[in-house]
Length: 131
Image (spheres, one colour):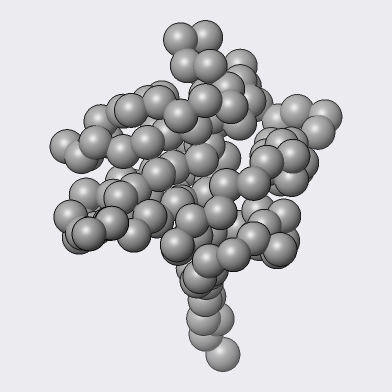
């Protein structure tokens, strides 16, 4: 029986942590996902060892997953003239990476995949302000 494929879309390099807490969330998601799912991650890379646009087998949080960097980024901790999220979304629009389930942590990549088949649950963050 074929395992369903879950693809996580976010512009980070799982092999080189940068500033931000999303790495912890995605790492926990990968670590505790059921073994009945095949996991893929579409992100970016900061090393020249991983070729952009090609699936690579990597180990993340003790689990083997497929990882595809869309492009190489030197230092994601520094602001650039074109924001990383915009570069990521534009690079994603040039591909068709549909899967059974697609998981997003930002709205922009979700919009880029609008016409792709598959379930697209969005992770929403709610902030509560005291009165």
